Amino acid sequence: MYKSTQTLIQEMAEDLQPVRALRLRSGLLLLLAAVGLTVLGIALLSGLWAGVWQGEASALFLTTNGLLLILGCAAASSVLRMATPRVGNQHDGPRWAALMLAVLPVAAVLSLVGHEHPLGEIADPHGLQCFGAAMLASLLSAAVLFYWLRRGAPVAPRTAGLYLGIAATALGSAAYGLACPMDGPVHLGLWHVAPVAVGALLGRYLLPPLLRW
Amino acid sequence: MMAEEETLAELMRLAQGGDRQAYTALLTESQRWLERFFNRRCAPGNRDDLVQEVLIAVHNKRATYDPARPYLPWLAAIARYRWVDHLRSVYRKAEQELTDGDVPAGSGEGAMLARLSLDRMLAQIPEQQARVIAWVKIEGLSIREAAVRSGQSESAVKVSIHRGLKKLSALPETAE
Image (cartoon, rainbow over all chains, first blue to last red; front, top):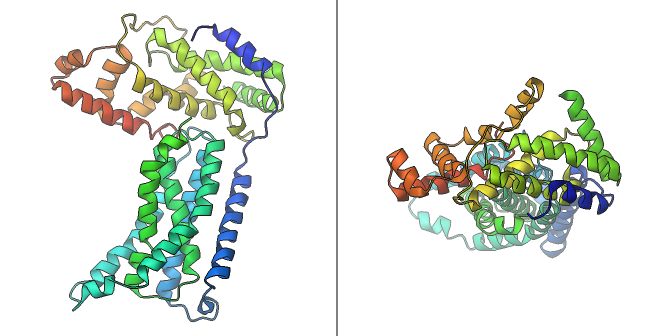
């Protein structure tokens, strides 16, 4: 730095323009709109499974999609708050929600122990389709959260990237879950949860350089 | 301290609306606060640069301050972020020596500073990592000198610094 701090302060004061404060509520509304559009897109392209509101959905189906939704909300809430930083913000919620969700794939794998053809269960022909569709359904939420963080001032870019990946894929997988009638523990526990693991890895390793400021 | 916090928050609210006088007063007070905040946590020769970097960040990111919340925890989060960046980039310089020449904080202010301080971040990482970061990145020891002082190999010191900085980078908001 070559100038005195007082000179810098004067220059910045002269440069001052009014700004609109970044509001958490605006971020939430934007994300809600993204999730709504995603569900609408899924409804138009794939059609939602009517069994969800006709009482045909199994408890495991509801539990899996419910946990995905809770994790998505917890992680998205942390991401939105990271845009307006302050000492004292804690971001533990997504960790616990992620651990709860992790029970599903563990249970799915354990349920295969002693099974005559465990690989046959895993090699679910619809699994990859659900995985890919959930990843695609995550894109709009990811774009909104990324835009919000770029406008904001995230002070822990690695954590922000990780939670962004988790939030977008958990919401995307929950949204696509409304179109998938399959409710087996292996299908739900592996193929509907796998996008979150991939999203976490992508967010953690690809996004931080793009979130630094 | 509460009165000062409320005054700063009000000044920032006015600054977000475009009030230049309030903004000048806010930045001047922030400068003083930051000088105390960074006291003994970076080499004196680097402190002014760091203060200026944080003030520029405040200017560029002023929209991210939530007017409904206190000002200092927001400023401290940004200051911590810039400090970790600074630690990553700083290397030994000849003029680096710690001094006690800065004005000590008053008692009420001391409590707030203590809660927001950089020491709270260092306390959250393993002691050995915090120690070698302080020696090399703040006091200006070379890797070799830090290795001799700690009884570790040079590569172990480098690994400790790398791991410590990685952990610190996750803590600007959560360590209090």
